[in-house]
Length: 188
Image (cartoon, rainbow, N blue to C red; front, top):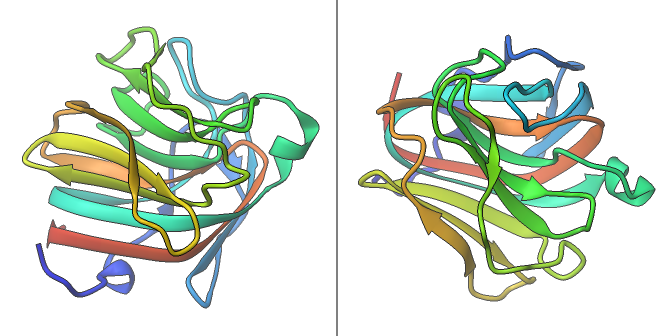
């Protein structure tokens, strides 16, 4: 994997996934979503999604600067998502916040299947603002860290398994991601 941050070399776009997000603002590596949708889970997803396609191994990291929906204590969809496609029922992995303010991992193992919550080590967004999701040799690792600390593993699993994935940021309301970096072995 190259050490160069390839964030700007990828074609980022508002996804065709059911749901919506207003145009994303890039300024000093900050991503702003103003998303709309019913959220993630069940047999179909509807959420704002800003994504790019990546083939091979990669590491995507960011700092969660704001998650407006978290303040209302309702289900939220603020985080990083991997998808095999952009149909609402495609195989996917979501790593991000839920209504309890902790990081969660949700997976849909097959197209049209029911999404399921993965058992993870609990980490609170109050203390852990930095997120990193990596794929190396088909293994997905979700990690968080406190300011200036070492990354700690939330979970490690094999899913989804397509070589080329849609990778990006989700929002069912308003979310701000800062310090976004993307390191990848190959790009489309």
